[in-house]
Image 1 (cartoon, one colour):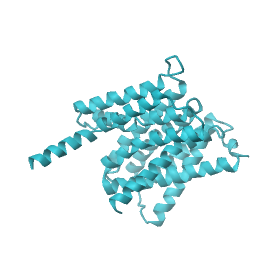
Image 2 (cartoon, rainbow, N blue to C red; image 1 turned 90 degrees about the horizontal axis):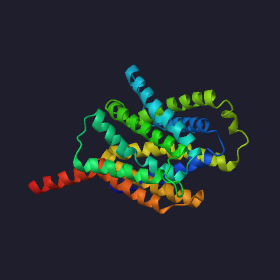
Image 3 (cartoon, rainbow, N blue to C red; image 1 turned 135 degrees about the horizontal axis):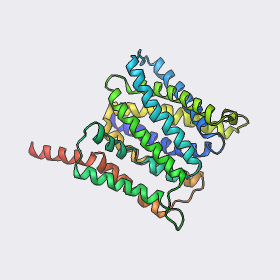
Image 4 (tube, rainbow, N blue to C red; image 1 turned 90 degrees about the vertical axis):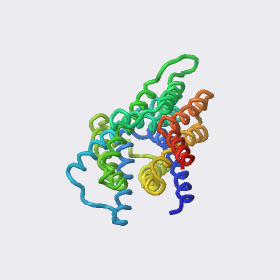
Length: 303
């Protein structure tokens, strides 16, 4: 797979991931949030595991690997997707997409704390800039300054996803990222369905009597965005590296903003655009991308 083709695939994945935030916002208005996420991710897991089975990319996992995958599923699937869905009931898709744009920076912060990654001045500046960008977005409510319950839940869901990435980084040393994704989706979906049965007694019944549009969005979100999207993203990491691949995540909030405007009729405010620009700048600095480019340039000059 050529580098140019990989970039094109990543661009496509960022489009469907941006639209997926819009899709989830649409779906929580028709299906109980946690039940919807459980069913959607279960379909994604089945699709992913089926693809890997026919590609013969599955192997038997050890009990320790299953334990780590369970921990990842709790943070990255159960907590992240449940809180995201419930949060989207009380906030806009545009706000949610911008908050989720902090995932790379938050992961970088956790890597500094738990994986002893080096914290430079530029990375610290990026972390502060990114969080200021999100604060600018979530602390606005008309003419007042207040954080909504929905924004808070989406923020916690973002942190949960970042925590899962720390465990994923450890586990991918022994388990292929594709198999990890597929198994994680299946385990996470079962946890979400179980949670729905406890906290949403009538949650699964909301699947009945839905329109063709709802089902079309549901299966597109599950198979394209969550299933195929993650497989393509992981393949890109193997081809061009995690650093270059991660930069494409900056496009997700952009496409989500466009989708929320045209498909949901949400109003895009100036402070959201400015917050988006701060978040993008924060990601480039906070993840160490700029530091790496500067070091590489100095090495070339020294050589």
